[in-house]
Image (cartoon, rainbow, N blue to C red):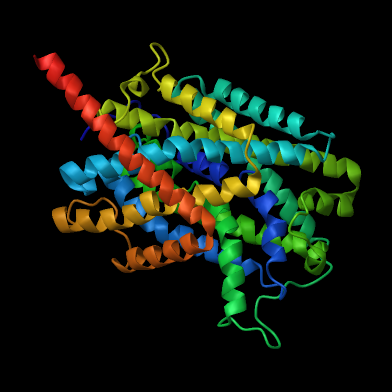
Length: 446
């Protein structure tokens, strides 16, 4: 296997912390009002349950692949190995190609959410919000510009503040409940109605986005200690923990603020919730902590994504400059700087809603669906005897995962076309890259 491990220093606690702070970013706080507003019946918790089910199903695939191939770059290596010599080069290149665009979009979404939520504390015009977004990405790049041991310890510290903040929100709501949240349809509503599944489809674009990050540990596969055990465990623990926190947080907030009055653009819903219970000063503290969570999430996702172009470049399947490691700190600094640079530019131009839809539309086919196919190909090729982790009830998780991703891809609307065009453009870039590489090799040989 290529993409040699760099430094296996990250333990289970640190790996789980990195996953969880990636998952709990600004997303659940920003998308909560949008999700609630999609359900006139108050059944919004089912969108979060659907998101969790999607994550758990897909996690079976990630865990099997991550435990068997614990290499830097995650999906890049899964595609390279699963699809064979020719198909593997193409599929892995397409993944890196879309990651080089999609990952900065994810960075931009966290940074934009940060700047928008900051306006609860201080007034910022549009230009000032963009400057804050860009400045945050630069700051996170500075935090990550160091060796992996330090980064692992820092991630645990960031994670502890994230968990304490969410627990405070949950306890506040549970101890000040003013209404019940419906879990079952009543009257003319039904689980089997078009209206219910239409609402789930639109809302789940946002809830699934809020769960993304459970696989971050796979991108750092070459730096995980005892990866055959720790990668699957960290993925499953992360999803289980975040599911509980998300459901309790939504239940708590909506038990205090009437869900019937929530509008899709209620930007400061959680801060308003804390203000209603404890007053403005406590709401200021809560807002600062939510901003901390946004920054911590950005920290984790940049850490993971910076390893993807590095892994491809060390294979000769992406631009060679990305293969450079820092001479003393031993991390892929060129990949980190380039990713942060593109994310900085996106944060100056994009809108939050556009970013979320674009992220999912770009990833569903090239990453999630292709990876589900890849795990089947690997099972047929190698059998299951050498797998450190075997997904439960195979092949059911693969089939269900493919159906769910197709359902969500449809509900991204026009962004599905956008994601498809990015993939097609990547095909053109791949053939140009391969032609240039072969030409250079022939010139060197002669």
